[in-house]
Image (tube, rainbow, N blue to C red; front, side, top):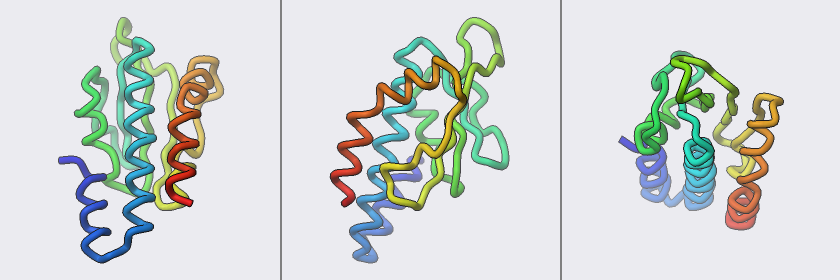
Length: 130
């Protein structure tokens, strides 16, 4: 189940259109982040702030479907060649402006490059939610 889509539909049902736009922006950025990690040749793990719900996958849908079950998620950058080797992380915090959903990440060249690759998506979301 995609928790983003359910939350967007619930917000629209309540006529909370700005909330729906924010959540859709968070979805777009989180999905782009997952794709960027996978496209760079790494797997993705998901920790919802309470437990690791996806240990390691190269399936974007599986990773995105595990997101947005709590107020924050950690998207983990996992090695494809060394089982269970975490190479970095991105912390997502939901409910602010939408475009700022990535609140922090590992200070590594890998994570900085992935974050930089998302610049156009983040700017697009920022424009859409303002």
